[in-house]
Amino acid sequence: MDVDIDSALGNSIDLAETVETITHVPVTVWASPYSLDGNSVVWSSRFGSIREMDDAQARLFSAKEYLETLQQMAMSFTDPHLETLVEVFLGTPPTEPAPYLTTLRAHARPGHQRQAIDWGLRLRASLARGIAVPVTFAVTVFGEVGGLVWLAYHRDADSLQTANTKMLADENLSALFDEGEQLIRSDMTLLMMRRLN
Image 1 (cartoon, one colour):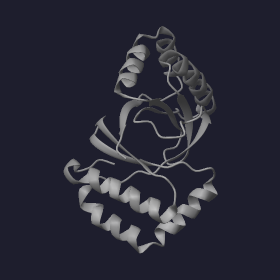
Image 2 (image 1 turned 90 degrees about the vertical axis):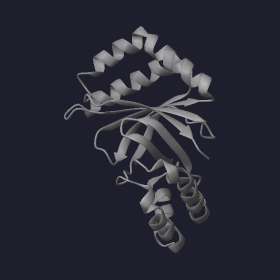
Image 3 (image 1 turned 90 degrees about the horizontal axis):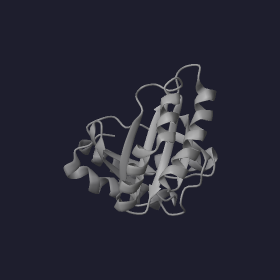
Image 4 (image 1 turned 180 degrees about the vertical axis):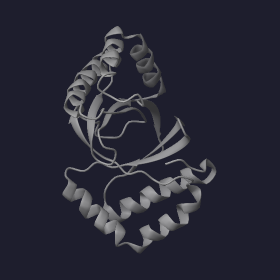
């Protein structure tokens, strides 16, 4: 979601706190200052099942405080929001969300979903070995059709920089990315996310 950065970051944390109070589900707020469209804000939560997520959403949509907070925040956000649900296929996220996160997002070409997932699993294994930080691979359940997401978790800014340097220098990763050109669309994006709360 692209934002008016002057007011949105504080409001984003306020919204997360409101959601946590109502649902008792932890919400992490991320800023992505180097996204293609400018500054973006992301809220993320983890659920064990779709039923858990549905129960939390039902509590939100019946809470007047949540709806009022959304309405108050509307002026801070310049673009419509995007909701996505992904399922982790391989890898375990840290118990506590990391201070920094890199997200690599891609979409399978039509007719290549299964092959793209297999390729994504191999890419995840190669990333985890090559950049030496925890990496998970997830697939879109709802939202963008054919979405593939790799998430790398960094303990600090130095870890983030080291991982990026290793990724760029890794010949095996370069070969895998070349192989993936036949399976995924050309709009792959790599974003750095900074935790705000």
